Length: 377
Length: 30
Image 1 (cartoon, rainbow over the protein chains, first blue to last red):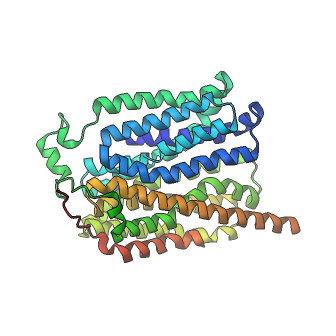
Image 2 (cartoon, each protein chain N blue to C red):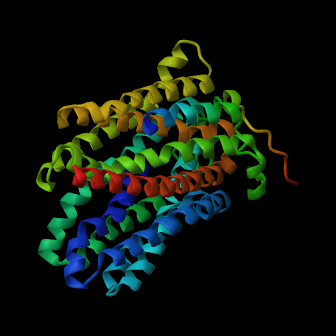
Image 3 (cartoon, chains in turn red, green):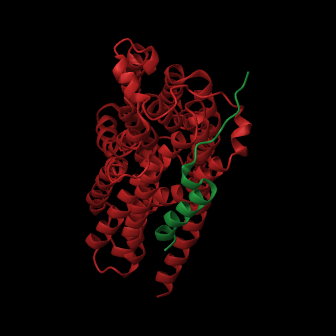
């Protein structure tokens, strides 16, 4: 369920990027207008992370996840009614607020349903849904748009979301309340942690813990790298290796697939470390170190003669990032009681978004200077 | 180079602020 929700999440946020040329033609959306619409999403996503994490901790995962999914799905479908840049901006803002809740809610569900040693694998599996969404959107959206028009493209993912919400409402219960769960299974889930869900702490008090800042600091430093891969790699391949749009598809699909494999494999990585006798926490840190090392060769990318060698390096780095991410996200439930996991994930996500915004500004300056150098040459 | 070093730096930051990923002790609320 979490994997599907994450796939829908990424599909919904990608629809507008794929429809950009269509919208420019049909409603006269300019580059500046598109920038405004994207900006509305980014700001809402960053601010929403703080609120959504706290919201999920307060109302619980069953209702919280449903409300979040309903908000982002209605907002995604609301794009179909928009006919001006302002209206797209409003729909995009609401989408950002709703979508920001996916990760805090999903991480909290994982903390509720899995023992500590299995959480990063569960996180890695649902996190890889992002890559499926990123691959499916460019296939489904053009197909629907050609047959039924761009309005339908915004509506189609709403069908998936409605089914998901119905299924979640019918099926999802916390382990303690799940009628199909045996006492043995419940013991397995709670075997490494205090079964108590943890005291509810005021949200602001979480900012007083060094662990919160450690997690947020790590997200601030590493989330921007992932956004860089997503948004700037096509430009990099185009500039460095002169690949046109018709030749960018395969490299991107390969990189996304490497990311999905990295996410799952990285999530599994603590298991062999546990078998070697390391504690759950040290296994997590050792796995993160290994994933961090996979990213290091990326600095060679400017010296590579062929695009295929560059794809291997970027694929390795993207896999390393996703494995890192699966473990980093799980550190929240390593360090905090379940009642605070959503809030801390939200705070870290906000830090990651701020880092992403700052890094994107840096990347624009870098690409402008690169273009200027090429022109002068 | 930034991408290559960001993760190692992040690990240092995480470990400095949360050595061994030590669990927080939250006070019980009545």
